[in-house]
Length: 218
Image 1 (cartoon, one colour):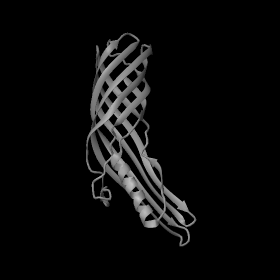
Image 2: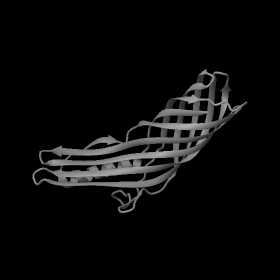
Image 3: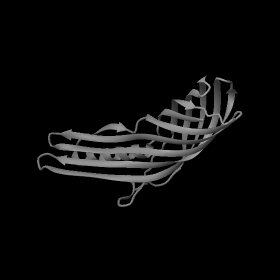
Image 4: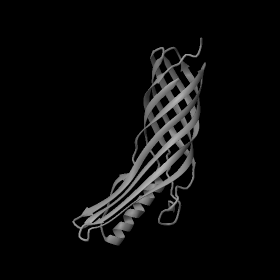
């Protein structure tokens, strides 16, 4: 089988949230301003595609997924503007096994688990512009790293046709470990205390999608 499932997910980005709040405090203390946290790594949409081999009640699957979220600090007045953006994304690959607790001709309810790796990127863009002196400082840094995870999940599917099915999924992405987020020129991404910062993609995943069945039997 093949399937495409848009997913809505939450993300536990405590390291990045702490980094962003620390940067906001630094701006406030040094410039005596009150920068606004516009985005603080909210829940957002992603997607997952999969191919599965099904034998009786057992399914063995390979998944490719994508998730993204981000943060922004912004301040502006008559004198200038400060904007700090962080866009965080990952492409993830995993292997999964599931077992069909309900397995009728049209309806199926499965429970399963997957393990995989997420290849993550943090695009950090900083802008400081002073209108009076016409000074503008803009920089972009791209950090890369990887995380290992596991994903327990339940899935309910309905097949209106022999070759076509609709599915609803509900699961949890549990991050197990993470490398440092690194840029070749800037080094590791660290916070104000010198601790390394990495994304944590742990959170719920809810999805609804469509799949196609291929009958390999002659």
